[in-house]
Image: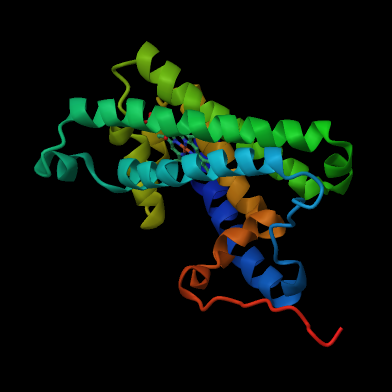
Length: 226
Ligand code: HEM
């Protein structure tokens, strides 16, 4: 019963809130659809922390897509055997995980030690901050510690299959029953952030100004009439 809730009902609730919440926010609150920059209060720590976080999280997302989305057998067919995959996941995944974590620690320290940034933070900012830090720490623990302590555990034979089945609407919670706790907490907190996502500054992810790269320059000229 608990497994059914944790590995079927809970993830679907989070996904549903994620989708419906975005539609609701987009229709009702476009004016506040923003990353709520606090750059005008403090620049230096924000630049370092935010840069490290984003440089780390993007490869981590691609790592998740390949580790969870691509079946093991397909990897074998592409010439990536288990050892090679594991090395890549631990060393490359671990490296970018650390970069993400350092960035997140700088951003958290900035939010809590600079008085005006702290005052400007809403409850949703604090929840996002806390959840991101928790998810990243648990992910790092699972990658660097659990994988080393329990080398026989292979998440691509359990978590990844469960995850793909979830996306195709026939999840089997039994696949998650023998998964180590660090992975379980990581995944549950990972889903939780998807439920909070539409109500937080994370919506800015869907508004990346890609046209910025190719758009024409904006020219500023002196007003000579004064
Ligand atoms: C919700 C579904 C999620 C699932 C099923 C999931 C699953 C996993 C798994 C299996 C690993 C271990 C990778 C390895 O050892 O090779 C991992 C690691 C990690 N995860 Fe997640 N995760 C999820 C969400 C998230 C989210 C939302 C974040 C970021 C905010 C995140 C950040 C990380 C980090 C930083 C690592 C360690 C570095 C790495 O291996 O790339 N995960 N995750």
